[in-house]
Length: 120
Image (cartoon, rainbow, N blue to C red):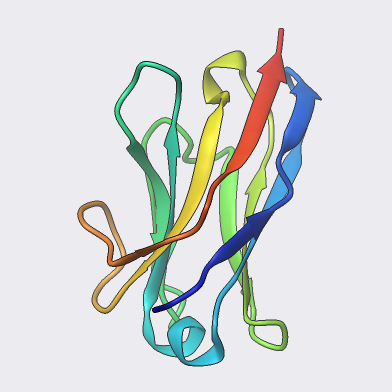
């Protein structure tokens, strides 16, 4: 079982920034595509963005230009830097991993989620 651990959620005002972290096992970090998803109350889970070890990155249209995914190989950690946050970004954010190309769709492993709340 692959364990993914997210952190960094919290409460922020609209227009502010927040950075989420996701720590993965080294083998997963180096060989899997890793992504971020979010789920707001009463809504379906939606794709936010994803990348792989070679730096191939994808973003949902709703966050492109505001959110940035990066990796720190020394810490086996993927980050989601969120800027210019909007109230509609409020959701539980999940880290996920799959063996394959990054992008929307099904993932094999999931973290426990971290709450992001953006106040207006």
